[in-house]
Image (cartoon, rainbow, N blue to C red; front, top):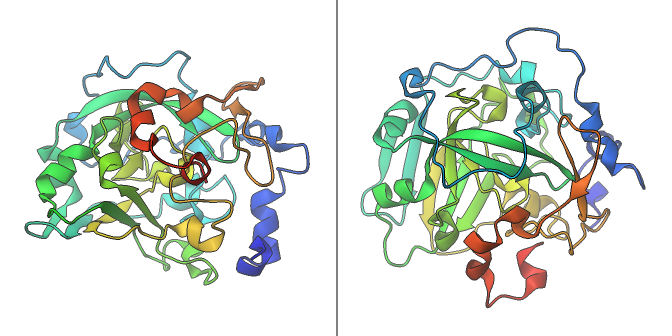
Length: 312
């Protein structure tokens, strides 16, 4: 099914107009040169005493961190709009209190305030690469906790094979959720062995502060070997299931946005190359790395799978 059949043309063009036939490299260049207010890096007061956290030296980068101003003002968050300049709208999202459900195939379902959940976890800072499917990238200092610690807390049953995650649903605040052609709420999933991989991370902070709303406060997934749309923001529910979930973008256009969405420069998106990327805050393009540079950590997860199925 052509994407235009799933999404109205005006919205489709708004998302894609900067790509063009040969102009995908211009995406990151459209970071705002000025901002209209000074609170784009304002941090919600969710467990503020935990920041800045100790940096885990096992997760470092071969490149400089992206400028915080660029990262915090250039965001995909379709709940607030289909353009990149949504940081102001996102400030309307209340993140305290924020109740989180952990349910499905678990020993005992839990409902817990996000702040209380965060305080239960081993908080640390990790430096991660982030690669968007649109071919821009960034290098970010996330603070948070390993997703495997949440899995351990949940005590999944033996038959659980996947972890399904859902974003909030507040169309009165998030105007993008009033667009009925999208399958709200945003949903993503991981195989359980992916969720318990050491790299899988729940981000609760960024740049040494509690995570800002436009970046997915108070709980956001970070899986750096996958394209950015897998890293679901503002999570309200973790559900353990025995069947592979149908993720948000997969429902809209499965030919272009698959369940695994692993980064691979050799497998092009159906409409553009994935061989290079444009780092935020830089004018040059750089080569994209297999699994976004995390081959050693994750390649074994997919060694017996058809490559055509694990990247899209």
